[in-house]
Image 1 (cartoon, rainbow, N blue to C red):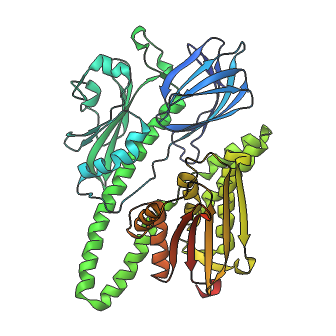
Image 2 (image 1 turned 90 degrees about the vertical axis):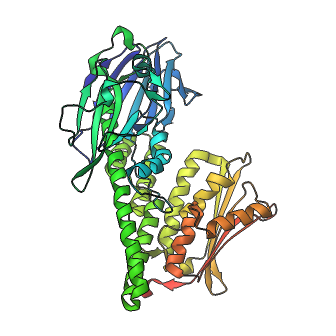
Image 3 (image 1 turned 180 degrees about the vertical axis):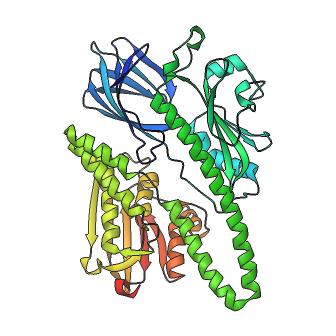
Length: 490
């Protein structure tokens, strides 16, 4: 077991993931903050953490919000969050930390101008680079600056200086003598580690990423390093992995731009040749549905969840174990990206597992009711179309609600169709608000419900109905009427 000594205590490293092992990304450690000591404010640049208090008591400040903890408490810290810990007790504050790197996999290709690397960087900047709060600089292949984030640490700002939001001169942001088409890391003259990641598309360099700017814990602090956090080895590996993921995401966008051009050429061919056009149109619909599924689905690694579940079971954390198992089943279900149809019973079961997790979050403050006609359990429905509608109630309906949250899911026959109703007692919508929501649903706005409308339209054409009704008496109802399709008739 490796022990890392710090000014505020020490860290017992129980597991550090292998940088070259893509199947296992999780780090496990026990953090010990000594009485009267504090872990200084730092940013979780590249990883999310689940924390369990073993002994002692303290205060966590996450994004400026204070949370007092004691033995037996759980704390979740999202990627990109700022965090500090204070021991307010008389014994060491011992905490088990399980960290997992942030996965950059949140593409939003449609309705975007992706003409060239610069426009791609501008598109993804607000989408998932800025929320990570990590110091990153991106160049094109000629070392022209395309993006430099504003979250460099105070040490970098103090030693290298800023002018109009940009560094006047920084040796770590200039070309090196190393082979620029390979990944490498180096230390600047101030002792900070920087990672160099080339952006390579089909064998050609289209740009470079420089990022990190961290003080490795193994290097030790100098006198002038007082305002910089000493980064653990596991976190440093995760930061590098995250930069690599960003480079891959940029390449994916770059590839999508080329794919879009090919699609446009196919559309021109459709206009010229009716017979060939029909075949190309069918292929185009399938490709659009795959893109829509990529937006709706979230991909995580099952090995990490299984490891966390085993650890929870060993520590008699049965509620956490059940939650992790439900979460693992959710992800396994959504990974079926090739599925177009599934049985209604399976889709409902997926929603129930999602609501189990919400039940852990809200406890007795959440009441769930099901009114399901089991006669229709085996009919075919579009894959993964219901959970985003249910989730919408938590994101919007219950957002400002202080009353007990109630949700009812119904499914049964209505006018020879399958009618599914998701009802919640959250904030009710005015007639104007209902019109706005319905307009967004039908206008391909990129809104979550709009994506579901697109999916249903791909499957049923215009042979379905998606409606919203909201008033103080009947609460807010999302209503779906879809054709009844037998499984053996898919």
